[in-house]
Image 1 (cartoon, one colour):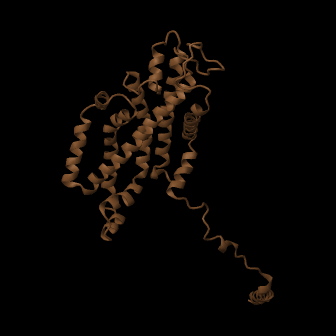
Image 2 (image 1 turned 180 degrees about the horizontal axis):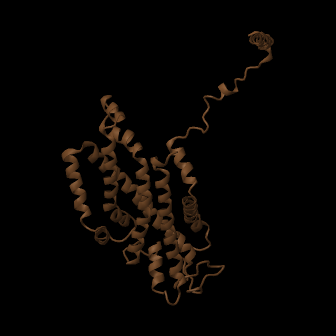
Image 3 (image 1 turned 90 degrees about the vertical axis):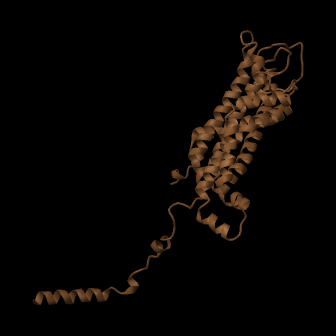
Length: 319
């Protein structure tokens, strides 16, 4: 018993020696308590981060950027005009003077390929914008109002879609005569239906959301709600769809030019160059090789970039 009393007394003496000035308060743990281990990212910042992490999509985007830059600047700085005829350089193979060779009129195929890219890519981008604009407005109105309006508008879409797209295109080209503007109208006349159905489905899933009901309660109009609230929340599938429309439009233009319903002479497009080269495949295969290669590479890159956008914009893959 006496030993326990002595131990307690010794412990009290030791505690008396431990004064507050012997200790220093460490506030570092409290100062870092509210800090996040990773900075907060918005939806689009996180999508860009995931897109950059996809090497296939990034390489495709870089190749497309190079193609677009060549399309813009090569015809400007080229020593040859796309329609310049040289009877002393007929059907020459690739060389330092003519990187892709010349055709049966002595025209530089390298310059004509990039001038043709202007036509083909312009048609593709304009068609994508028209499809997106018409499809968003049409599908947004049908999905937002629903009921009889939606039923009638969707039956109209089914009526147009029941006729094959290429038949529409060929008939309209024959009526309006070949040219850039008729090709754009012909391809876009049915191309917007897929976008309309896509955006209609997005509107159906979003129009009963709380933020839409709050905006409606505050007196916002229907068009304002569609453009201000529904469209931004459905932007990711729209971007993916438009990215996938472009290679389809490039192929449609190439096909029309290949069968003689493309842009008129002396203009050049990838399809027209491929058609001219196909007639000389056995004797001068390079005249088909280079425009066909550009068509394939461009369509492949757009498809691969579209896949990358689909993965990057998928909200289920956010971390």
